[in-house]
Figure: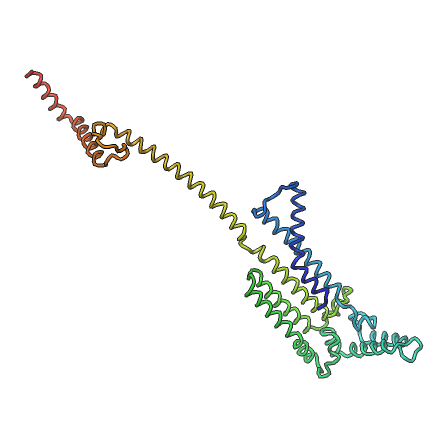
Length: 348
């Protein structure tokens, strides 16, 4: 891993958040003017921040991938011999002869180091097994003398790749345990996707030749695998950045909202309580006013208020009133009362 890649990964910790804050502030100044705009913590502010942060992450991820592609080493045996990736044995032999005439040590313009490099490139690319391994695992196959078949090359190459996946899986598990789990499953998916893609690229023959036949494709399988690994790291960082924001429960906003709701609820409860007390007083006064005919003759020997009159007194007065009304409404009682009144007048 180069210094540029390390610095690029470290920049992910600072640049996206700083750029998001700056862009959102500039947008609010343009759209709402100075000292205006949604209040921090409000739903609109959080929504705008999510959108801005997602755009920043997407742009920076695109830039990082482009930077990784530009840093890929294009100096390889194909470039040394100045042949395309799909060059056949005849093209390799013809090009090697023309270059060896220029750089052979016996020539006045010769260069022994260049000639040795050309000879090594020609030997590797004209050997089908060595070429298969070189396209996938680079110049390391030069020292793999015990690998006689493509299967041996694949097994040896996967053995070299195994530590990468073990370390990556260990880091993902540690991050999943000790950090926020939201977004961490993306890392597992990316790692599995990387493994499947690398397995496909390494085990399939003729991929780079197929691509070279349609477009100018200067990268070998080894370069694609390297790019795939870098993209996995970058995408994992991006998922870790976006996960807590996009899939969060907005705990901060919810806490503030809950506090505001609690204040409003307390105010509403206080007002309802005051209204309830007022209504209770009004109902009590209305009730006592309607019961006044029944309690006006009650002696008030104590200093108690009207609201403290005992229920038994009210009940007895109410029963007496109901009995009188019942008697007055009965025709027989009215007739008897009339006869008694007439006899009384006669006696007088």
